[in-house]
Length: 413
Image 1 (cartoon, rainbow, N blue to C red):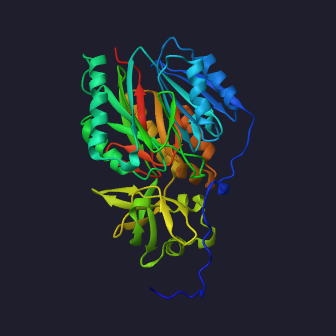
Image 2: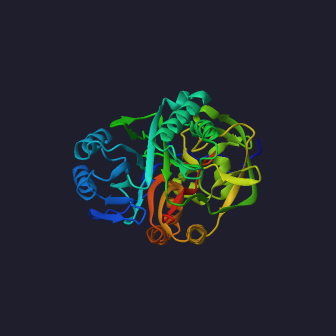
Image 3: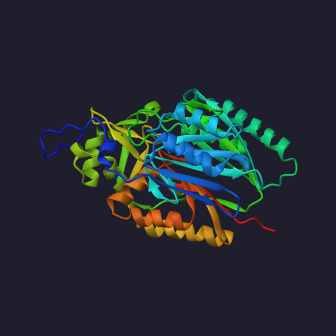
């Protein structure tokens, strides 16, 4: 290990958590929307649980809903939310998860919920729960896909190829997204997969999923959505590689913890290479100095989650000894996101609705660069609804610091 000019290494903070992210508080706000494809939305920010539930029930009702997605603040009592939805919207199938922030026509908000109602006309949605993903075997993921494919085929015997996409919601602290996505995507075949890992507002204490009227942890939800409307799946990021490299020389892959980088204490080496103070590493610093790996000719982010008292680093994605990490340089977040959204609009001949999964580190980076309001304006203009995640899924990959989703166009006559 090479010698340092500084004789003593500073203590590393026990965690770089949500305390570093000062979210402004605003009065409770709400909005309801309806789109040409028939999807209806209800958005609530800074609201108490009963207030949010009453708003969802009042604006949606039950008559035309085929399936309801709900993304909600980790500050809500998830069991009370599930019970409240069941009481107010009887007979409506519901799936959802806790978030690190909600995305809607209110912008990028907190301490609220986003409800997305898929209509019975033009959509058929089937869903299933995959429990105990921390002990997931490949066969179990494939079996879940097979069951849902069979259910959808019985419901839609005349469905044509290219009319179905898959959505995953995964416990954001299970550390098993890669294995799950690999098993599920293989079984899906030509059905494209997008999704997000549930968050808990950067507390890293526990994320929650809702399915079948119950609360679940260490689990994943998989949905197959058949639709008459044109759609395309996408991913977008805003970084490019530099010449600075870090090699993982000591790790605990099961827990996604790296103890050493370049044979040095991980937090010290990372901070030294990117020019940060290792004693004050926070999510804002991680977001501004991402690390990437090269896979199949493309670069994918391997984002840091937090530091640990011993100077090790916990990641949001799989990591192992020998992995070569490249420090990346962020490029213009607003411009890159706008190019992606404008491209979707051109491809579909007009975007009607976007279900989006946006990494919490992109949000932190946007806030740090004082462009969060510009990103929120882009999302509003292009009808993006979704949540800030602890990781994103796109086809075969589990990703970080990326914006993924599915864009819907208007039904073709």
